[in-house]
Image (cartoon, rainbow, N blue to C red; front, side):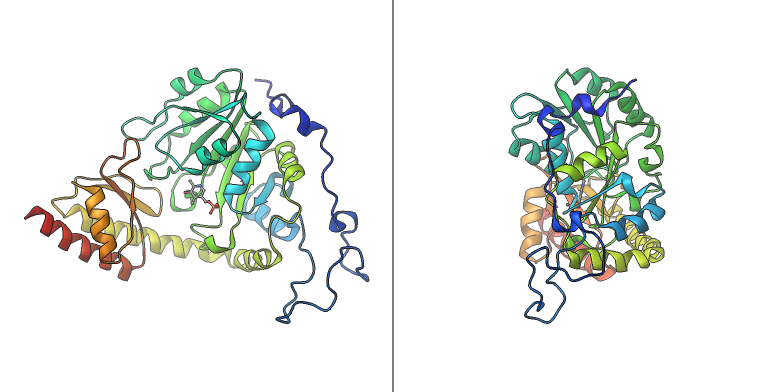
Length: 354
Ligand SMILES: *Cc1c(COP(=O)(O)O)cnc(C)c1O
């Protein structure tokens, strides 16, 4: 397949001249900086927040490139994955004309972002066991379909998608295939970043919000061909990642080796939580998880959710989501948090059974 990114790019984006920031025009570190209208005296708290940050986050990218086995030019960093999702819509989808394909039940932001941008949505539901249906997905595409979003491991179901099925979409579709790997660190599946060279229409999203424990900083990653990354950089807000965030992410990357230990602990806790839930007669089903949460089917999810909230235990009620009827999504917490959840859960179920 001769994939040409220029063919799916919105025509006006081709001619855009990006904002040229002071730090674009002079990127050296030494000198008397009188070019960006910054306050030379610093901030009121005495911290060094008065200078604009690196617009392309070069230090993070050079470290991340080694960890992920890609080139720094294949990395885009956004204000959360949400920013990358929005920029993709704006780069490739013409409002009122183009469409994207979503595979429910899945992450809600794709639909929100498409709706904000006036992009039509086509839905091809997952199977009962939450697998993608490549033939149906490809059949649903038309000449205005620009992006297919595949989430693996999937939120809210927790399972990973069959690799061959994702490959089938990558080969059969002439638009962009986004593989959202927000939960990949919790899975034994290899990241699709290793296949970027094989598929010019592939974009892989990951995030610092889950395994890395940095949800508060708002930083997400996108990996793709240099050409696709260049387009995202062209249309992003100039200083989209704050200097404070960059500093903290860099410090975390220095300790990247420790991530496997945190992940191992969370996976052990997930196992523990699952075993306990399996022993409960009112739990109808626990779906297999490759993520840091469990999707659990119970007799009356809405009531169970409300009752848990009354005991100050907050889970996610997914019962209104297609194929997730009467399901709660439970994030794996610390041992103490999981015990607190289980205690309330057992107590409430005992009451409602009587
Ligand atoms: C949590 C999550 C993200 C992360 O979003 P951020 O904006 O990076 O915090 C992305 N995709 C999915 C499917 C998620 O569940």
